[in-house]
Length: 290
Image (cartoon, rainbow, N blue to C red):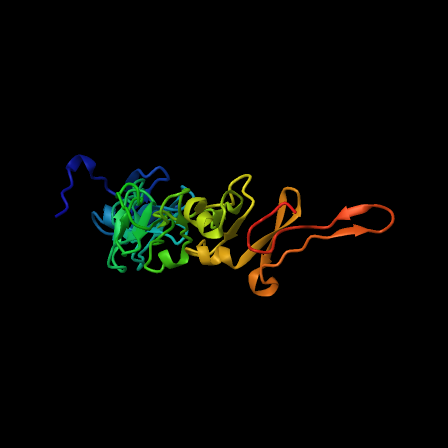
């Protein structure tokens, strides 16, 4: 029921108007509209708020105009930005409201998949996680104290069930330690295995005592080391696919075992001008100095 005080009544000769000002304030009175956000009517007490317009926030900080009974919306887009405007939306990451300039939404949620791989969780920040057992949700792997292989991401609904298969994890190991699968993704998307054959008397001893594995490029000063860029690729089998031959005093070349049968060569060329050492090594899988 509309209640109007006598003090607020005004007799109009022709039309009434309801106007929404650019700052959001409302004006009501007699006269004909000359602005966009204004409505005229010709009945008693007709210029109520319900005939007028309201504003909704848009993406650039300005406003759009819509009817009193229409909605404003805020949507979290695929790029994790906010899309705002007048009207309705059907996206699962969108919300509507009905009040004037109601879609300000400074704390509009981010969205991550839950552990079922389908439901969406509203999150206070863009961090999402999923581990190899498909436990998933808001936040980071460390914040959720996940102690198995786990992926962090910050895009809209990024923690889908195929995320771990698309992510590079590396085997990790220190010298004389045990080989384990890394618990966190390798952001460098490169794994290494370094086997210090020069320290060991045999390849088996080198694998047992002088092997390092991890995320990233080969450690500085490592001589017999290989890198790869797929999931859990830095294995002993991967390392054994190559043998190493000297090409200079402090540099080696990786040679295919299947093609070169672990054979390196050492040659001295005498062309009557000078003597040059071309390259040298032992052919047993152990590096030598010639």
